[in-house]
Image 1 (cartoon, protein in one colour):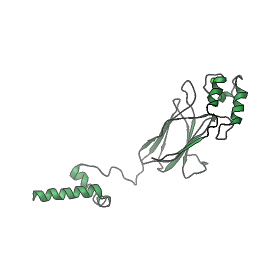
Image 2: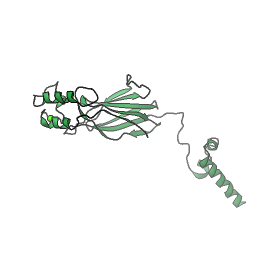
Image 3: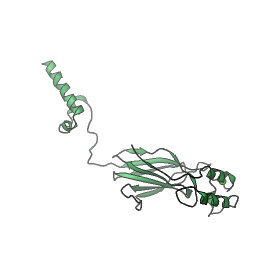
Image 4: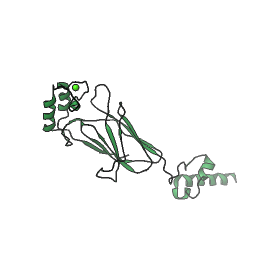
Length: 200
Ligand SMILES: [Ca+2]
């Protein structure tokens, strides 16, 4: 009798583990017998989910301000932003949403190439942390590519007094537009805006 009881227990254990279709008709069977919770989430109830990340710039003082805009992936032309936030000074940002679906983010900053992450798949109650990313500076004439037009603008502004209209040519943020800034831009020559598809 004891062997038979153990045999039945083993059968239930196997069924609970490997047969999802069976397990859903006998909720709690495994939890009660083996103290394992297989039903920790009710899929019909969405909890808020979070997308967070860190975007840095060329600022030499660690002040990495940029704009991060959130779209639904279904908005393929990115015309209806869900939310837009400025990063904290350390470059960190975080969105919390209740509509659990696919999202895109676009990071922008004047003088920099945009950075886009597509198809970020959220799960109820979970946080997605995107990899750190350093924005690429030099797209002064916004085209998505750092080319001769950008380089000409950089050289025109080099060694000019800084004012509110040309401040973004002070790439490293030290208050002077000089060769240090143009050397950084030169290092990005011919780079293009990056778009990645979130695959996790
Ligand atoms: Ca500078």
